[in-house]
Image (cartoon, rainbow, N blue to C red; front, side, top):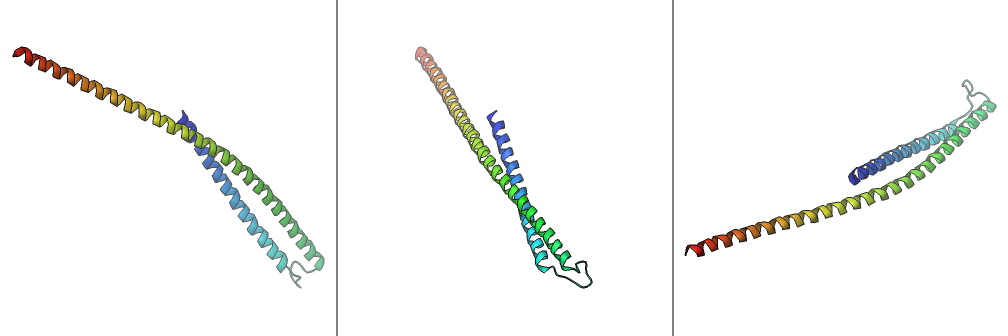
Length: 145
């Protein structure tokens, strides 16, 4: 039973760690997206024949990109908060996992001590039976004499 609980907690910890890694990767993607958007803002310019041919449109475009960056930063903050809560859950589950592991070790030690005691009892019984059979043989030999 404890072994099953230990394995369950260990599986939960592994799942949370995998989820945390996915979120960390997502924050890296957001960072890359923010960097690309900032580069786009910095390198946007008015062109004679292009889409952005008016300073007003350029400012609207840059404003839209700035809003996009703000949204990405907000999303990244939410993800980081979620990562922190996952880390707390991971710590709690790891503590429970260690407790179950300790209980498993105690059970193994008890089982080992019981096995040693049983083996000791069996060996003592064997020695006593050999001693008794040896005494019977000696008694038979004495009676024969």
